[in-house]
Amino acid sequence: MICLNITGYLVDKLEDPFGLLSGDRYEFFLDLDVDEEDELYSEKGVGLKIIFVSDENGQRLSQYHFFEKGTEKVLDFALEEDEEKLVLQFCKEHLEE
Image (cartoon, rainbow, N blue to C red; front, side, top):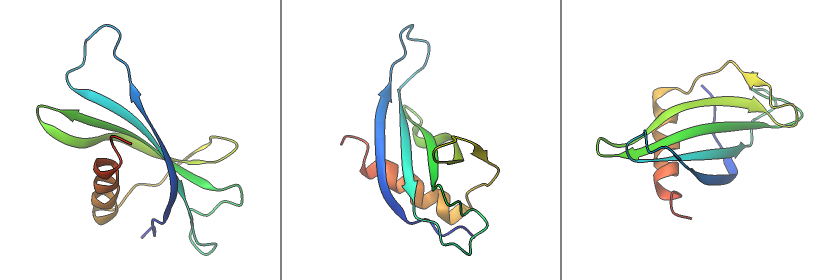
């Protein structure tokens, strides 16, 4: 299990210049504090990039990936169900900031 300790974030609304997509999409970048003993740990730091969708079907995580800060290298890890719920709730709470 990955222990998610979110230490900072950025959020940007993504524009759909052609109007092809329903609803709104947001890009979140979460800064994570990962314990040195965790297999996800990197000395450079770890982030989580999320595409968050808010449309007529509700709010959800469309896609996400972990990355190593500085190199932007994608890390092959997935969120567990409880972690995904935590991240979804975080995005909902910080959507309009």
